[in-house]
Image (cartoon, rainbow, N blue to C red):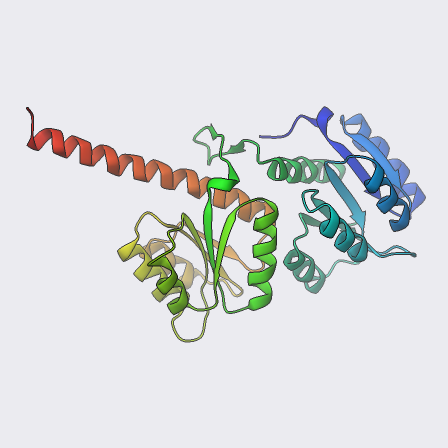
Length: 285
């Protein structure tokens, strides 16, 4: 569900005057309250004195580049989502920025409708508002109730996802191996597991199988840097709930976690009802 556009206060930061003017006008026509800044210094000044729901930020600027501005924003105002824009997109940049916890990453020239959609979605996630639940209606899910375990041997990815989830108030556990994850599950129950397919020692598929055998209600998202049809099908056969490519789109990942958490609650309610029905059947009096 999209946020009410009129309630979104947006800071647009770019040193290209023509782009700044045209984009601010286009977003303004779509109901956003747009404030503009022609450089990073001005942007930081405005953020310190005004309130914003989201920042759209160019990467390449002459005084302070976008990544440095983002670092200062995330350090002082971690609740504000930041969308990065760049005229020179690359997979390496996208991977690096997604690991840092950027809300989204778009290449220029950007389509206004796509940018507007990304802005609304980033604000929805940061506000922990109602998110569409897989076509089965909507559910008011508080991120603070969700317990997630991330299992991956890449420490950079673990750290970056943990920071992203923490900003959204999702309780997060991390494990650098399958064996560590299984040991942690003995004492730390979780709702959703984000699990890398390829890991040294015990790989993700074996971890998935063991998790589903002992904890069938845990929802599992498989991550793969080199996705294949064979691995995806095997994951489904073993009980995986989703299969995503690394590095994951942060907005999509958070939405998926929220949806799977809701599914887990439904599963547990069904199991409880089955137990109640069985008790009533055995002891009718």
